[in-house]
Length: 471
Image (tube, rainbow, N blue to C red; front, side, top):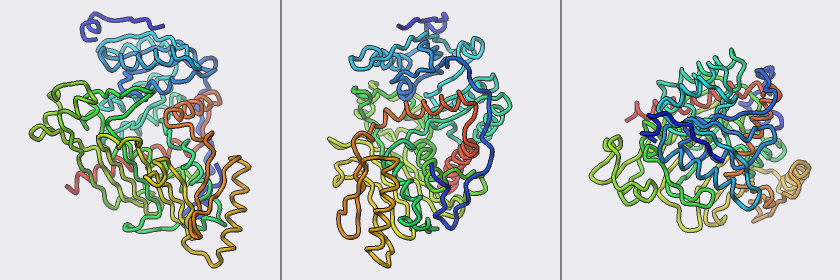
């Protein structure tokens, strides 16, 4: 059920121990958990300007502690309509339908209206990123918990605002948290778990700029299918002043995974990060491509600055080479227009230990499904490594029953993972939300989470800054 409340203007506008493997690792953080006011009673969601489909994915499932009434505040137009269509689809599906009841306010003063009325206690924000950092800051200043889609900041100039938002959230006793879905992807989870087995992985290497100890690469596509239907993107998604460049967008996930896997439960600080080099480059879109993903026949005025002839050039690609606590890492993101038939977004990741490399590939040989390999790099005895690997696997099967190892050849093992663990990207949003709700009910989260979020966005924005300086 959807009920609209519109102003005249609106109507008119419509895991384990911390990196004990690495010589650069530190012991687990001893910081006390971050404390805030526990949320009693039902969580009541307020969805602010849900212009990105991730806003709807948070509601693809129901949660016992969340009231089905959701309050939506947004400018009128096709973006909020697309969000509502997805919610309707979830409510009306045959299998496990949801029962959300959306009360919608549309108007240019949508933020002011939300802050004045405050009908809920948690604000979800996933949309145009141009003012997202300011939205987050104002919400926490008004005592509202926030669950934010990445990125929470898209420019070095606004990074201090995000730091202020975390400071104000602490003062107000509210939880500010971002949606890191990739921590729940099973091959990534197991890559981290195997890296925490010293007898298998050895020590995390320091690496070098040419051969980083940790590499994470992500390939995404503008044209894709979401919840069974072709995705229509808002035109501002292609304006880096509103969406953000690739180097500060998808790389948020990659930087988060570097921290989470290599330095688990370790509190990081900005001084731990040193940017070595970074770069940015464009993806070219024709007017036909733009029409297919937006439904528009021409570029809006704000995109003309990026149009060369009839080709739209979007700075959606980026790479950052950096060190984190002395360990060399490289993260890169590439956006293509459309994936080849039968494929989709892909991920490549390597962690280099003194005994082996843990590598995730998702190419043709893997059927374009993420697959984790264990590749020995130095072993005095192959039989000894095989025995260590078997012992390590036995430990992990207690936590992840059903996983197995397949010896592809004498120097490569493939981790076999039951399909029950492969829930898919869309399901990860519910997993993140469940964790967030658990933190809310307890009034606490691990002490390293907030400092490490700040370090993560420092890394992406400093990487962007250096990419501009190197032009």
